Image 1 (tube, rainbow, N blue to C red):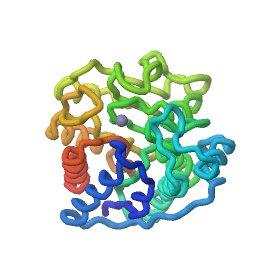
Image 2: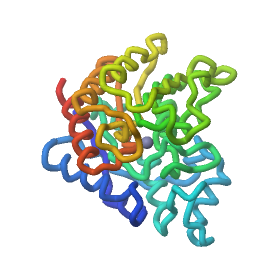
Image 3: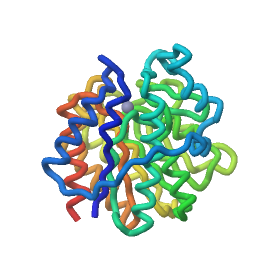
Image 4: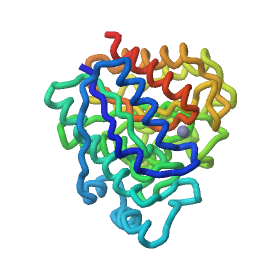
Length: 301
Ligand SMILES: [Zn+2]
């Protein structure tokens, strides 16, 4: 069974005319409802203390009280804080735990989480890049609490997941593997020389690719998934802003190549649980088709 998570409340994170808009997740949900019969996993509103597994509590408090203190932007004016943003971000991040529980109970074997706001740019002490709390990182920590000790995070968003790298940089129990465009946000981080720190050395792999990368070269990068890391679960930061028709990258990836990449990841994962968490992707038509391609592969075997 394939699990699926979505909540209409995700639309309450009101970003106005921003490209990271509620139409993204709403449009994906419409497609999913029409085309797939998936096991719907309910969301939950966790306690803010749960976020301290990956974030500094001072940052969490600052976001919680931010709107009332007239803060409308997090970090460098790219991450909007609307009246409900804290609650939505808290719900998105902490709801990932229900997916882990569903894996643990044997209810599902794979899952797609249609979440917003996205999370992979959110570092320990600050959100940024349209991200408030780091969903995939919190999910990874809870997976470990549930007995999935060694977590492989694969991030194919066109941008480097600086937040996820930051949170697990000195940790040898979470392997972070990212492919991303070299000359793109967040800049100055995501270099291939960044391989981890202390115990974490060797457990962080960045592959930074050239502008306008095309299918064949991109797919070959996924031959470098970490064969030696004996993982218990795979979490995927599924950002679809690498696609040909996307707005904020130059990558030229086709739907056929996306499909092949997802297949490579699924084959690599084998019988272990795997969850895809939505990160970027801003051209609505391209985004919906990309998630469709992902689900086609996830439901194919
Ligand atoms: Zn992105």
